[in-house]
Amino acid sequence: MFDAAAAIRILFQSMNSPSQLGWQASGDDPRGQYWKGITCSNNRVTEIKLSNLKLTGTLPYGLQPLTSLTNPDLSSNNLGGGIPYQLPPNMQCLNLAYNNFTGAIPYSISDMTSLTDLCVIIFLSIYHNNTLSTSSMSYWSNFFYCF
Image (tube, rainbow, N blue to C red; front, side, top):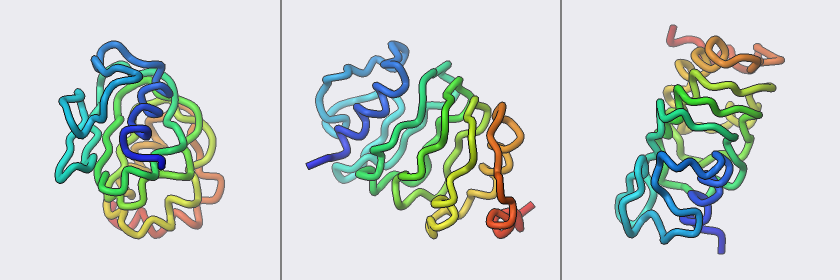
């Protein structure tokens, strides 16, 4: 069974196993010990706060098991590549601003009903990532009402 610990290991590996985090690629479950930037509650990963750590690599597929993750913050790093369309299902705010993401923002994000602060993050992502685009702005228009 694919679980939260495996998802965190995939995240670590996709970011080129950054030494500044102090995580072990084959380490124990983050729910059972301190992992920099990871917060757990009731044996579930609830937060990933890894902003401004000079992280490189990509945001991986395989984060769906993090069902209690609500506000991941990976802003102000050097992450690149595309934003995966399979993200944790209960996110409320996804902060990927000030990175180097490319390609289109996945349409599947617009189907995530728990996202309440997406408009701010999409705004930041569009204007502070090198080549991130929204090829069809029409389906994003409902997220821009808060400006």
